[in-house]
Amino acid sequence: MRFYSAKADQNQPEIVRELRRLGGEVAHVHRLKNHCDLNLFYRGVTVMVEVKMPGGSLTEGEGTFRAQVESQGCKYAVLESMEQARGLIDSIYEHTPNWRKPQ
Image (cartoon, rainbow, N blue to C red; front, side):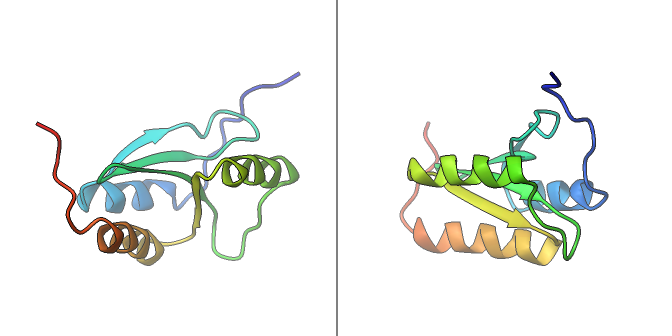
């Protein structure tokens, strides 16, 4: 039984760079099979992020993981581009207007 999958989508590095440039903390978890690719932490919000090439779709295992995450009330996003990464950060920013970084 395999627990690890080393393959990351080609656009993952540019999406990670953009999320970090905008102030997000990013943890790489893409090597875990049937899991998301990244954990994004920004303004007190955690988002499980799956990176796909444009037009790509979730595998059955990724879809099951997404359903499990969302059933627990957690946030999950599929990103295909830097523009979508910016949109995700903007959305979090708009919904946390009074957030202050812990001292």
